[in-house]
Image 1: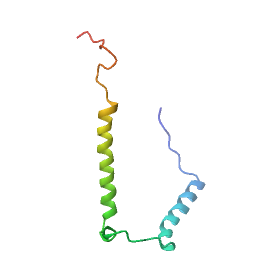
Image 2: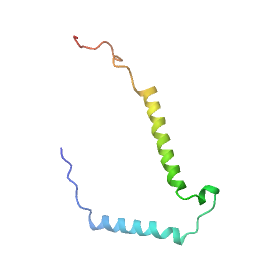
Image 3: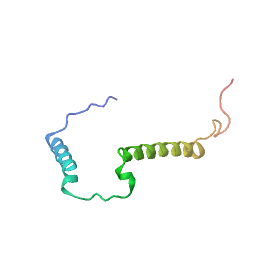
Image 4: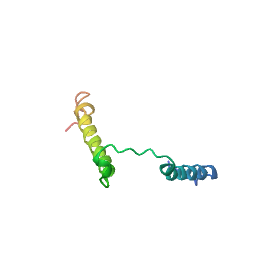
Length: 83
């Protein structure tokens, strides 16, 4: 079954435009920035922090998957292979 993608309606475009403008304007309207430490002044800190956090999530979930989810090939009994 092939999924056919449709072009967004005018309502969808309006929602995207309002959301985009709000995302760009809110940091200038609201002064919510508070220094939490030296890392707020390091260029690219949050990009590195997010990338490292993502890598940790991948590694931990892979280890948990191997430990808890994967079962041996003959988990449900003997295989029916005649070889």
